[in-house]
Image 1 (cartoon, rainbow, N blue to C red):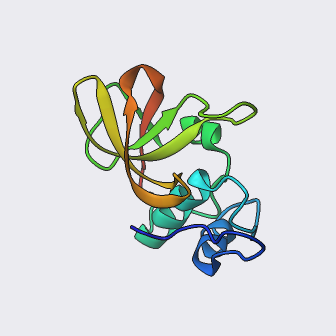
Image 2 (cartoon, rainbow, N blue to C red; image 1 turned 30 degrees about the vertical axis):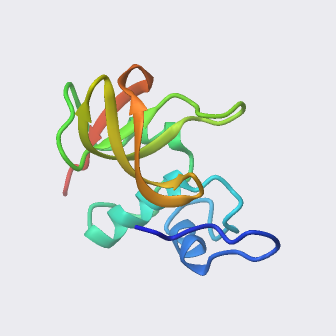
Image 3 (spheres, one colour; image 1 turned 90 degrees about the vertical axis):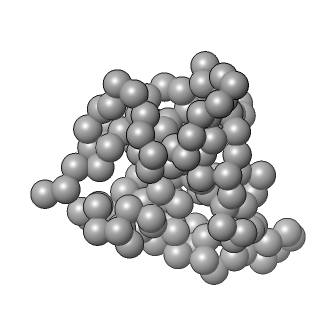
Length: 129
């Protein structure tokens, strides 16, 4: 929590490390990185074989589909910006018609943020082999 994009011409090396866990490869922090954060976390937890996707919508095909969320599951949301594939993060909780996600690229940093439950496209659970 707290890793942030660097303003201007620089790039946060930790966010670049997130991208190294994706099939996209190392990228600067100005490239959308929510999927890279999920890839990094799952790789470090041993729940990802190979490299994950940096594209949020691709996480809808990962692991096992859940009919209802559980703490720590992957939540995929509708696009938050024009031209985006969606948003992805780890489900922390739900209250008042909103879910809370721990994710990357949330206001350009790793943090918990709230989103309307109506934006959820699906919940996924890693399947260990």
